[in-house]
Length: 426
Ligand code: EPU
Image (cartoon, rainbow, N blue to C red):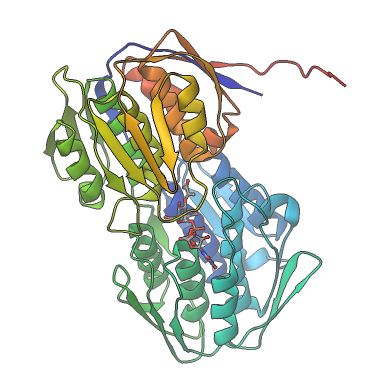
């Protein structure tokens, strides 16, 4: 397994270009299944989760063509089956996003239940209940969600809690339903809005995306469309936090600053000078140590759970006591145990990580447990004395495009190490 070797101590300095948003690209790629013809999707990030989605669609018979600029043409006309197998879904839970489109367009879907996850139980009951309310017949057989329908019928869907992919799945299903659907308590994440914009470009009639009430007037058919995915706000935020922690100065380009309001407010609280342009954000710590901040995660527009681990890493070396409370997932603190091994003074009380910042961390071999946890360990490595070796970095490759190249471009001492040969200790 490959690992990242980081020698800490360098301040980040320079410009960096942000990639397309993983969590917008994944539902949009699933959404291509709704069309009668091909779509061309641009600004797709070059990530493992994208490759997995391509493989998933490919196994359904969908034709995909990728050009050198990662623009992907996706043609669903050659689809031969509506099956998302366990071996794919278990590696990427977002595979569940094909459920709504397959059902709405083809009247059938057999999608494996995702199963366990490192950050919480993450059930998909609200996806299933919503589709049932739209008229689908759904059973769970042999670990698979077996869904069938003739044409889905518009309905009022009141979501028990805010779910991002749940909202996306139901919005896609409702797009081809007979009649109007209203999704209440919908997720307001920018990635939901991006998906709605793409679906509307295909001929869907969706309004209210970005608010908690989304109205979908079903249409009979949709055609393919050309669409560019929005920039990744979590990648943007991760680089900004990395710069703040290393007392550096960076400019992130090709991003969407209005989507980062909650994080920018926190970074200003921690002492960063921040300037904002149309599509860039510049952060300058002027060599200062960041001040610890208090953060509480919640659905958009509040502070994103996908930035929680990175803020824990920042608080670990910040001046003062900082509290980070996680309210979205029940078990998203695996990084705390690893950061403790690097000398962080942090304790967990229920869903809150309380840390008293230390001047510096010390390098150690650490293990990544999920995507954002691994990002936080890389950030910790950047400010540690000595070498940090981050293991299981396949997690990070799922969601960050060329992270070590981008960090090295900003002056970090970071290298990808080839995997060791497996040793059998049996
Ligand atoms: N939930 C249920 N039942 C459901 C659906 C969700 O109880 O049917 C619960 C979840 O267990 C969780 C909460 O609702 O406690 C919110 O989960 P949500 O459904 O919003 O998460 P998701 O759609 O599975 C997306 C992102 C995650 C991100 C969350 C929260 C994608 C592909 N994934 O997941 O991204 O953390 O929203 O913002 O969009 C990541 O990129 O690292 C990542 C994990």
